[in-house]
Picture 1: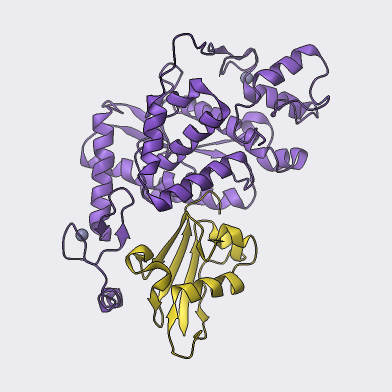
Picture 2 (picture 1 turned 90 degrees about the horizontal axis):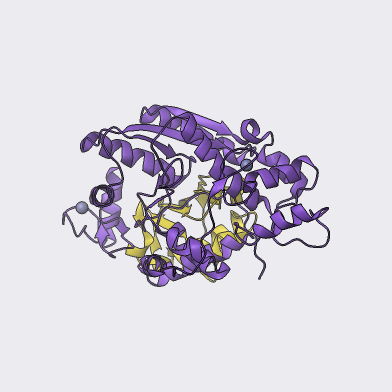
Length: 341
Length: 99
Ligand SMILES: [Zn+2]
Ligand SMILES: [Zn+2]
C-alpha cells in the first residue's frame, strides 16, 4: 500500500539498519536491531539455515515430518523448511503431520490452516486423531474430567499421537516449532519440579535419538514473535512459567537464551539414577513404567476413574489396589499442569 | 476519528471472535489528538468482552501481545505515546497460547 510508507516517514519512522532504505517495521528481540520486513525475513531464514547446518539436523534423503498445529510457529516452520529445502537443496522429503485432538471450535480453525499449508507448500498431510488412536476426543475427555487437568491428558496424548503419526509416515525425523520461549519455559518447569533428568535433556536441539523417531527444534534459538500451541488451560502451572518468561523478555529478550544456556549447563552426576526406558506392556510405546502414561490415563477414563494417573493421589482416587497406587505415584509430578504451589 | 483495531492470534476470542473492528473514536482531550494509550483503554472498554487480563497488564498490553501500528512494531514508534491518525490500522496479536 502506498499510503503506508508515507505514514511512516511523516512520523519520523526509522530506516532499516540493514538496507538503509526501507522503513523499519520490527525491532528484533535478539539484537534489538530495527529492520524492514524484507531484511527481517532474510535474516530470520538465514539464521535457521545456519542452525540446521551447524547442528547437522538433517541428512540428504531424510523423510521429515513437520508437526503442524496450524498455529503460528508451525506455519512458519512449514514455510521456512520448504523454502530452505528448495533453496539449499537439503534433499528432504517433507510431510505435514497434524494431530486432531477433537476440540470443537478451537481446533477447527487451526486444522483449516494446516490444510491451507498443505496446499500452499504442496506438502503431503497426515492427520491423526485422538478419537481414532484412543477412542476419546478431547471434548469428551473434558466432559468427564473438567478443565482442571485437561493439559495433562493433552500433553501425554499429543506426544504419542505425533510419534504414531510419524511412524505411519515412516519418517526419519520429526521437527516441531518449539522456540526459545518454549524451551526456557520447560527448563524452568523442570527446575521447579526438580526433574534433573529432564533439565538438561530438554534443551537439546535434537531429542529422542535413542527412541523410534528423533525430534528436532530448528527454532531453538528463535526469539522472534511466535508462540507454540498448548491446548489452553489458562490456569495451568505452565501458564505461570510462561507469564514469567514473557515478563523477563520484555525487560531483556536475551534472558531467554540465558535460561536455555543454564539448562544446558546442568550436568547430571553419574550417581543420579536415570529412569530406564522400556516399552509399555499394553501398547508397546516407550515407557519407563509397566504401562505408559497414555495407557494409565486411558485406563482411568475407560473405567470411569478419570483422575487416575493425574498428580498426587488424593484420598482414595485411583487406588483400589496396591498396584495402581504405585503406578499413580510413580508418574506424579512429572506432567504439564500437575503441580500445586 | 476512524481507526481500525484488529485482534489476532487468539485475542479475537476475547471479542466475540471478531478480528477486524472499524470504529470511530472520540478524541479524549479537546486537542484532536489520539495516542495509543487512549486507544488501549478504549479497546479494553469497548471491544474486549471477556478476560481483559489476557489483553492488558497494568496500563499497557500484557507481555506477549505484539502491537503493530500500520504494520510497524509499536516499539519503533513510541509504544503508548504513539500518536494515531485517521484510518490507522492497529493490530494486536497474542503470542501466548490460545489467547
Ligand atoms: Zn531492510
Ligand atoms: Zn501404553
